[in-house]
Length: 417
Image (cartoon, rainbow, N blue to C red; front, side, top):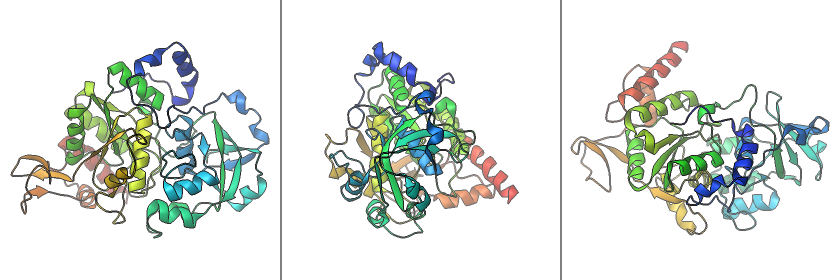
């Protein structure tokens, strides 16, 4: 578990720079390199943006606030800002930046006609949280049309507006602002994403933490749901071949209906306390926004975890998918398009796992024969229905301590409806 003494990311920048100058990062020499070779740092002091009051103000959406934080702390390395037109086109068509570096989803700053008409290339603009807090300055290098007809089918593999990622892009502005950012803070007085300060670590911080523990082979587990028995099985299989495990839940913008981040975090803390080895397990949050882009998002999630210092990344069934838009293992197969020189983090490709009554444990199609009626499979929808009724999911699906957390949440929600 992470101590509560870590300073907030935006307050750590000077300390990190000082530590690097003193050579403390030499202990990180055995860790995987960040994507592109080095971590980006877009944080600046408040004095560096003192003239922001005279600039055109852009109010960010919750997704854009998440993206800004990811850029600022280097989680989106090598990006130093929101992408321009050449990178946008190259990402959409080839999953690469213009310079050839692998990047699967364009990180964009969409604005409406009113903002577009008040800006010019070569100017700067002030980026504000929805509550009015000044977060950053963007140097406007590009102001260009938002080609949704290019982005949507390429990134999501569908144009169906029932897809939450497609709808999010369709609802965005018709113009894109591209350019580097100078970020003074990633916090606001009423953030849309839960902050979780004890677990909100930058890539530089997680890397140092891995080095302090003597870990060089680290497996990351991406999740936006509570961990059930199949997830636990994948994590522990990964731990058998790695030094440590980073449970790294996404706590940024998600779609309606997903279990709230604070409930999920309580589930993670509970299962780690009772069922994981503390010295081999680390919990930290990833404040990015979900795109639900399936295979392409699996690549993005892997690159993000490479930046955080993970050498291995767990990719299970229908990673980052939604509905029936993607094949069961498309998110694993997409890694075959790239060489190991291009994506350094190694994907750990797992089959769908389930509890087997006959085997008395977790199995997959690779490890145990399939017998009718033997294995316990429950959909997320079915589990939520059970929880809303105060019913406990079977122990073969969920640890009882985690089920208690979920039942308490679900019944409290049902009581207010």
